[in-house]
Amino acid sequence: VPSFWFIMKKRLQGKNYLYDFYFKNKKTLDVGCGEGEFLKFDKTLIEGVDMNEEVINRLSREGFKVKLADATGLPYQANTFDMVHCHNVIEHLNVQDAYNLISESARVLKIGGEFVLSSEVVTKKFWGTFGHIRPYPPGSIVKLLRKQSREEFNPIQNLEYVDVFYFGDYFPNKFLYLISAFLGYFTPILRREYFLILRKK
Image (cartoon, rainbow, N blue to C red; front, side, top):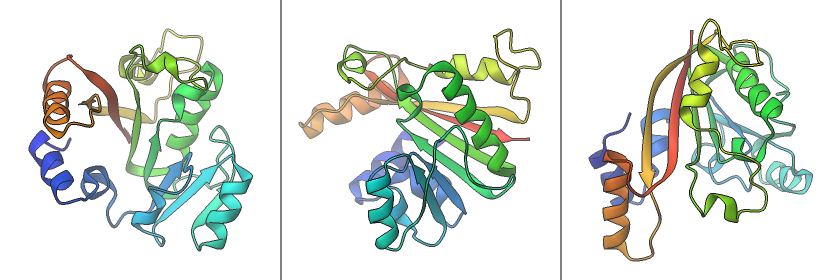
């Protein structure tokens, strides 16, 4: 995973540390691409899907490679992408749809490709968003990767756990934000968001 100092360096440079560390020069699918913030890093290599028809039509007119699609049924052949990016989507899904998002992301990844899944940690702020259905802590997702998931779902055996890292809460004050980021990365204090990295076997 990117070191804390790598993250801070990229932020001071005005760059996206996640893109530079994981996705640069790799064919990537952005699941739940929203307004296209992540797509803008590379119009050629990054493709996106979203359920918002108006946004997809606009992004398509602007030259982005996007498709109107549900994250639970991705309109791509297996083994298509080097990477899959999914940021703050899974917490908006019910359990069955969240499971399908993970299994579909695994399906479209090439062998050795990585799935970077991020979501919010449970805080009071988590439940302050109307569209949040339920949290999915990293440990609960990793359980699905076991040979016997011991869940009501079949295990997802073609993914393996690589690592997870956390980031702190946001503060408008830069000093407070730095402290929060440091504590969130190195300790359980002030954690706001996790980044779970899974690899296709």
